[in-house]
Length: 253
Ligand code: ADP
Ligand code: MG
Ligand code: MG
Image (cartoon, rainbow, N blue to C red; front, side, top):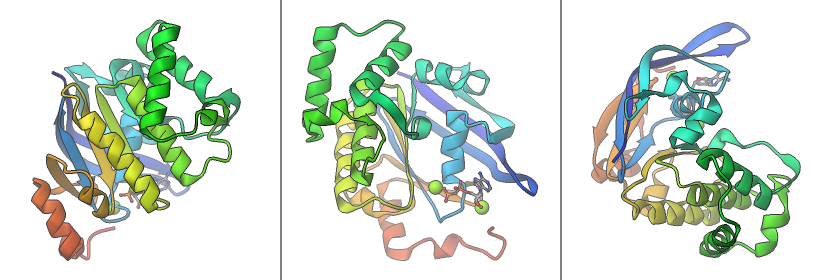
């Protein structure tokens, strides 16, 4: 049983005009076995939260804490965060020409576990995870992210999540490019992970439609850099019907 705890998190981002405060006191606790949805209007800081947890250098923590079972996540390097059990989908969004999906996954698994996975079980695990995602075995030999379609990127992301077996998976469903196919892939992957009581999921999304496929245990509405409202799955239904209008005030950036 693990706990990811975000307390009063403040984050600013470097822009050409100087530092801009984006997160203004985020409080959030995710435990193993729980699925949390973070929803909210565009520009409310959802991706900033994901990047901050990932340790992206452009985002500066100006206050607050993030701990994983009491360990200070913010003091860890990007690699150490992965080894501590955080999976952040956007951690490896770049193209890695010449590195196959298969090699990439094995290298990542080795780095996280501190030893190479036994080849026989590993090959079986990869095959079955790819099967689950209805991926062509030939995909494993392609270069990472090179020419991947939106759906292939999503499949690759979920494949990583399933094979790296993190304690917490943070999935930022960036608001563009999630077609119905990709939506189904993400949903099925999250629903498989949801069966595992050892994994907590933080699913960040603008659209409520993904929550027709995944039932989160908790929904948090993000507005202007912090959590404005929290509830159970019924809150997602309400957002689907009403949108975010009632959260938007003239002071919202
Ligand atoms: P969301 O994911 O909820 O749509 P973001 O976290 O992407 O919101 O953005 C929150 C705010 O921070 C927006 O106003 C956005 O323009 C700004 N922002 C985020 N990242 C950067 C950046 N790298 N440079 C400048 N502004 C940024
Ligand atoms: Mg975003
Ligand atoms: Mg804002």
